[in-house]
Each structure stands twice: as C-alpha cells, then as structure tokens.
Length: 210
Image 1: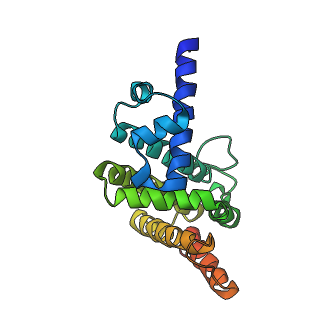
Image 2: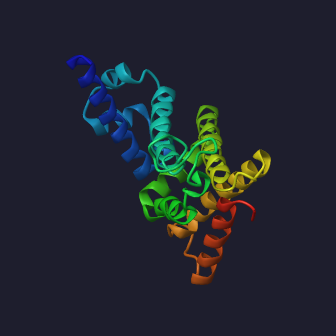
C-alpha cells in the first residue's frame, strides 16, 4: 500500500470516528455533512472528497459499525481449521467443541457497553426512515442469524437447517430487545428475569436434545 493510500485510509477512518461520535452525541437527524466537517475541523469540500454525499457517509459508517459487531459474532463459530473445532464430521467430537455457555456470555458482554447499545438504537432509528440504512441493517441481521445457525448445527448436527435457522432468528430477536433493558436504556431486569433470559438463550443455542 502506498503512503498516499495509507494516509487516505487513516483520514477516512478518522472521519468515520468523528461521525460515530456525533451519532452517539446528537442522533442520526443531526448527523449532517456540515456537522461532521465542523467537528473534524476541515472544509466541507474536504469531507466530500472522501464521502461525496450524506448517503455515502452513512453507508460507510453503518458498514463499519455492523462489520465490527459481525466480526465478534463470527469468531464464536468454530468452523475453520485451527480454531479448536472439527469440521464436516471430523474426529474428537468437533460438533460439541463449541461451548454455548462462554459463547453466550461473549455475546451478552456487548450489552455492558452503553455506547454500543445507544449506537445501535440510533442505527435502528435511521433504518426506520432511510432505505439504504434499512438495507444495511437487514443484511447485518441476516448474517448474524447465519453465523448462529452454523453454531447451533455445530453443536447439534441432528438439528434440521430450518429449525436451526428459526432458533437463530428467535435468539437474535430476544437479544436485540434485551439489549435495551440489560444496558439500562429502558430499565434493568430483575435477577429472576435475567436468569430466565439466559436459560432461554442458552436453550436456543444448544439445539434440541439428541
């Protein structure tokens, strides 16, 4: 990569960092090209060199936010060589190498980051009013469910593809709704409610009993 390209990528990343901070601080409605340029201390034309329009800026920002989350989710599915699990019916019980308990705790840990939860509430709000944002969010959740489907089938190969997919989609629905409560955005669950939620999520991840 040439120095010029590397510098350009660094500048682009810095501008997306600025846009992310503004989205958290003021919401999607206030995330204008002028506001991002002012916050970054550059001219509007300089910002437009990297992101010609607000749609381009939002698309890049959403892609980054969603890709970061999907990367964390994808890391939970041990379906590649060298990650401790077996693939395609390998030996040593590879289907059961993926422990659902630690994986669930890893996913739930995202709820401990209030900024991340607030960021997603803004992303959801944008998706409700912007077709391009909605398309990105839909693709993200489809990939999220696909990763979880693979995880479920790794643990319980007897689970049919449709059932595994349904379990994954219900898991995603519960998780995203739970994020508003577990993060404190919409209150806090009681200890019994938290315990029941965790058991329901774990049951979905582990697949039906053999």
